[in-house]
Image (tube, rainbow, N blue to C red; front, side, top):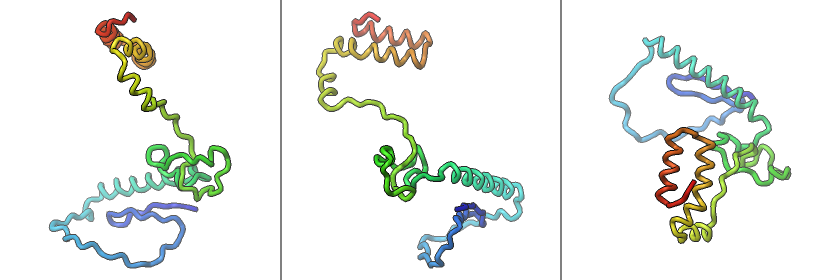
Length: 165
């Protein structure tokens, strides 16, 4: 199914090859704009808008090719899509492209402690907590930033907690 974008005045029209039923939508009751603007004489802006719409159309056709075989829920992947389809992961999704859940791979979520373990960490004395947590923090800082400033900050935190690094 071919999807195209067309510029009509100041509106973008999306056509996906299906005919729309001619239905009357109720008009807005908002007040009309008191000032008017025209782009008739401004060819440069019209050229920019036209090229922008053509670029959108090209991106849309490339997206359609990339999304071939994906589900309805995969639209906007990964930021705006639905959550992952549990059945697709096991190969048993019966809904196929009509599925409302995402059929594309998502990054793994980071591990979160449950309520009982969070309470245990909160109740620990500072030195015991720091002994447990600082090596993990040090590992993550070294993986991302090996600058002397970050090392000095980590050493300062360890010294304030009374923990040698």
